[in-house]
Image 1: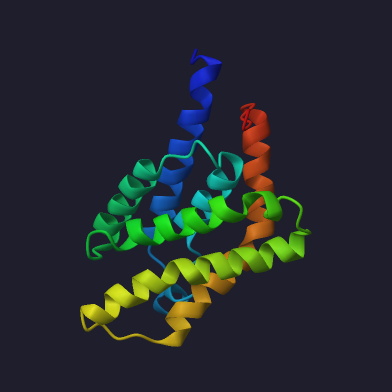
Image 2: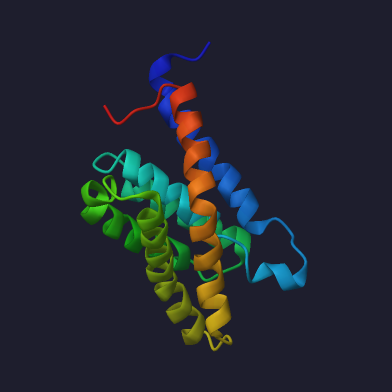
Length: 164
């Protein structure tokens, strides 16, 4: 039996592992552009739950694992996660009072903002850049957010995880 104290850490790590797997799960070619940013969604959720205790080093390590899994330049996803964490930490109190539709719009903007460093790194390496690749994941991530948040809240309440 795992002590209650470790539930928080195990659930956070497990959710990031599942998000990393979903971020590289093979999809048909047409659907790859529309893949939600699962790692960013998990990070947004946990940073909003633990805004002052979420480790930026942990997010950097998760980003490096995502870089390795997706064969991206090292540091690309870490930088995106740090940008997202900074924005979430600045605005978590305000977002807690948002209606669900406003929160969904906020998630769209945060994911879009987090993708700017990724697009920048891709253009440095002379890889093609299209607006659809930039906006489509942010749109699908935002549309998925209400269901995703509800599922994560159920998991958090089941394992009695709170920000206290």
